[in-house]
Image 1 (cartoon, rainbow, N blue to C red):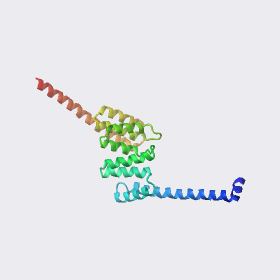
Image 2 (cartoon, rainbow, N blue to C red):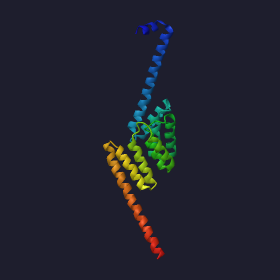
Image 3 (tube, rainbow, N blue to C red):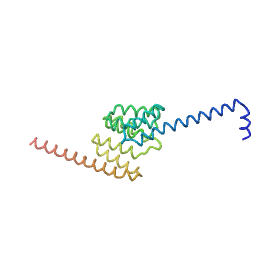
Image 4 (tube, rainbow, N blue to C red):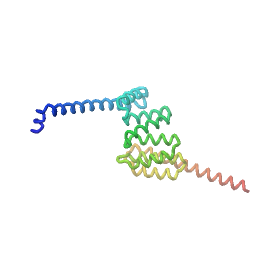
Amino acid sequence: MLSLFRSFKNPVTFNVIVKAGYECYVLENFMNLVNKYVLQALDNYPMYLEETMESLSYALSYDESNTMALCLMGRVHAEQLLDYEQAKRYFQEALVHNVQALEVYPYFIQTLIDMGEYEAAKKTIKFALTLPAMPLTGIWIKKALLFEKMRKYKKALKALKKAKLENVDLDFSSSLKSIEERIKGKQEISKGSGKNSKKESNTAHK
């Protein structure tokens, strides 16, 4: 404490401390302002899209590298405008700024699946599963949906089983059950179609 008081007697040191304190104050207020607009956007989405976009525009004008804002902008383009290419660009930009932006991965993977970019989705899922603190249930669900889209139902159910093992959220339980029922239903239809094709082939040969 005594050394701190002594440092104040030195005008140069005192000015440095004051300047550093001011810069921290400005930075803190700047981040609070950005977070305020991001939170407003999250609160308005998806009910009030105009207000969402307005808040996101303000947030990104202050901080173009804000991953939460970029992620939500990507979601707007993917989920509301069905502009998957633009959505993909926003998600990629967010990950360029911070590859560990956990909030981006589920939506980015879903967009890749919707675009039919299955290999890219597989690689992204594989990487996402290695990230510390990643909510794994959501990523395993995306893997199940990927295999469902590819009509690999056995693999989809296997991924869904891993999602169940990771799940500790009651809200996810009903979703997991409905996804499982849907995949099993498609699996039965697929088996039925295969049997019918085989019968028709045998009948044709006769």
